[in-house]
Length: 91
Image (cartoon, rainbow, N blue to C red; front, side):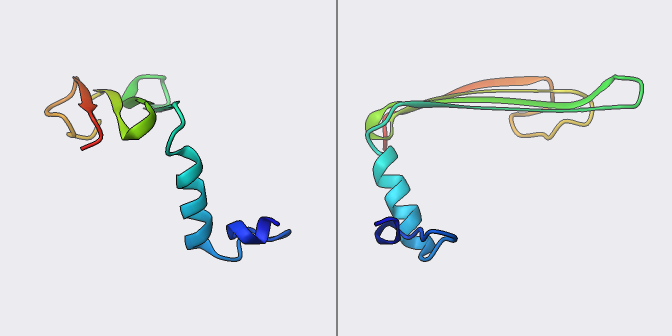
């Protein structure tokens, strides 16, 4: 039965179907994705830190909170330290 969703007993048999099935299952599901990445020097000093939290509501509505700090952090939101909250109503 799993092969009907693009996943066989030992491997993915159809990546596109597996992805589409996964997307359809999550479409009406609320979930939170949290990602924290910290890079430190040998002495423990923070070089780069990126923290992201995305709260997804059904119908593709979401809120994302992003915080970036450290002298070697990526310049995603402007010069670090930087913080932003992003919202979407699905469009």
